[in-house]
Length: 80
Image 1 (cartoon, one colour):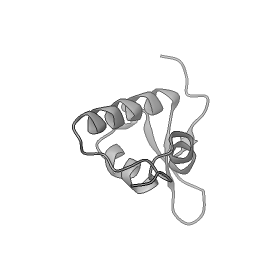
Image 2 (cartoon, rainbow, N blue to C red; image 1 turned 180 degrees about the vertical axis):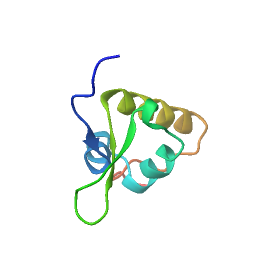
Image 3 (cartoon, one colour; image 1 turned 30 degrees about the horizontal axis):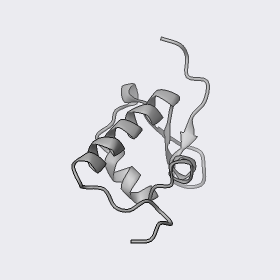
């Protein structure tokens, strides 16, 4: 397994995917570090949820599954 060379904050991923950050956070709670979800300390008083490249792919699959099941909110910034 290659070493992790970069992580991306949940804020960045939400903006990149056009999704609500809180919804992504809720979806990612069941992910583990081996799934690519990490908790990074040292950014302010609290830490921040971040994802590896594999974690982003895993999160995208969860998003697709939720959309297919009709359990997804509209994309952030889209009209209802």
